[in-house]
Image (cartoon, one colour):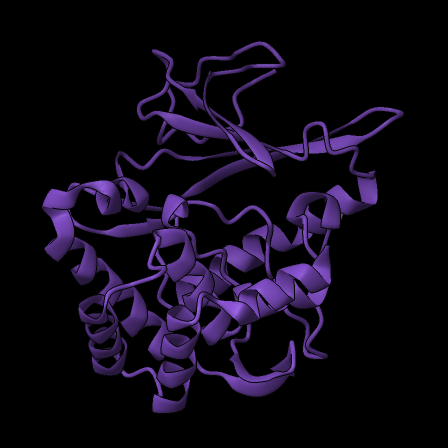
Length: 270
């Protein structure tokens, strides 16, 4: 089997079918491997999507056909994503999965930066840049989970572990393999509970509404039972980024009260 990569990253060497790299991460949706070979000019990440999830061939092809479009949507809306090189679907009589080959971003994950007490100022600067990007997104008013919210035209899996900052200070969204494309009807173009783990509406609320994206991110960051000084700094950061006042109030109230709306959503999905 000849390499699926272009000559810009290889010397044209062929490699055997079933190529694997060094496993660097296991996730709920995928296994991630780092591939470094002499014939590669740059290291490559291989993400095996749906391994062990018993996805049907249709479920995998639904993800596949929206993958490139989704990355284009993200880039048009200001998100930086790694370069995609190749996608291959595998199937047998029992299940299907997908291997995705993409650029490896060398840098530091934002969740690692947040844990370092020496980088508090840098952490808040990163928050400010993310909040500013979210504030610039066009939204429509929707009601989900008994709450009026503001939905983007697409979803984004904004977790600290999904963000990597390179040596130039550029922040990349490195997990784009559950393509969260939204149809004009307001429904997901592709969805698999086997991969996502939660229902369609809760997933929409926490990945495609500005309030839900912010709240899930803040909870994962660890802003919980926060001191007044942290709450005030968060309020200032959201306000200065341009998040609308009503949304800032909802987010701050949720954080101060222990994220009851998020708990309601996840409880509804269980």
